[in-house]
Length: 389
Figure 1 (cartoon, rainbow, N blue to C red):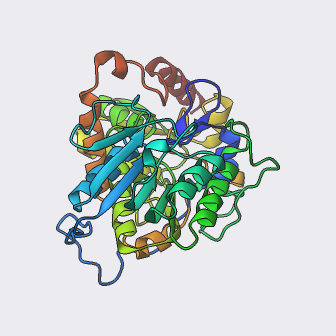
Figure 2 (cartoon, rainbow, N blue to C red):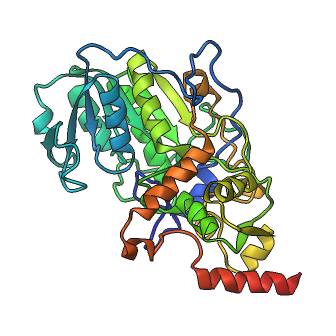
């Protein structure tokens, strides 16, 4: 999920607008059970060891130059795939000059894809079922597998923990609408999944990620914490240190998508992490450890934050209060994906790499983070919290 800088409180990192209400109702995360798949060979860093690359395989990415797309491309190249990109050529147009790039607007015409064949298609840019019907319909005889990047926003009830792939998804009366608005993002994603499966039955991998984080994240949500903690001093921290949080490093997600597709994995999978329950206090402590800052944390209960008009997820990124309609938030089960080989790099690595990436951005970009509290606003809330104590 991402912060919408205009009106909606939340949007998916790969989507249009999604309100906070949508997130609370349809995008809960749940405790991930289990660890590495028994018998899975792990490298020294705890990740799945590289496997022999496929010989002469081809992969098409619909999108490919924003946040998740480049990680899919890099993972595919590392596994020996010949990669083709199809996009409008407007986002990071100079990226991947060594790859074949076909340009076009998927909303208008897929003509550049006609008459071509690929072993795997990865769709990172579909938000409306018509788009999926067009692309999967055109490519159903030209590809062995179709990977759709969906979202855990499909789930309709986040008041229950341990949502899994069988949990109910949202519905809307008009599935032809093509404007993201209040309450329809998750159901539209669910319809996209259904459209892909209808066009290519038994050959679709529907991936439902939650919060995607790491270097290159355009939303600044996860990034807020490494940056804020590195600045040191007293840090406003939300809720209780044990309140659960979930997210997945974009590189882990990209690598698993390619690895799973290559192995012939099909079906629906929640793809979020980490492998074991993680509290917001653990995240902040990891940020302090990595940055070696002098940060201290002053914890504020959800009721106090609400009274101060400090909003979960946007002002206090990553975190949602584990009560009421968000009881199941940050507790979605990814056990099925973990059993299918999803693995996670250490949290400290994600924090360090995110902080290092942030430092490479221009000063004007870093001066205006897209998530979290501005320093003066945080200072005012901290003062109110101290006065109350």
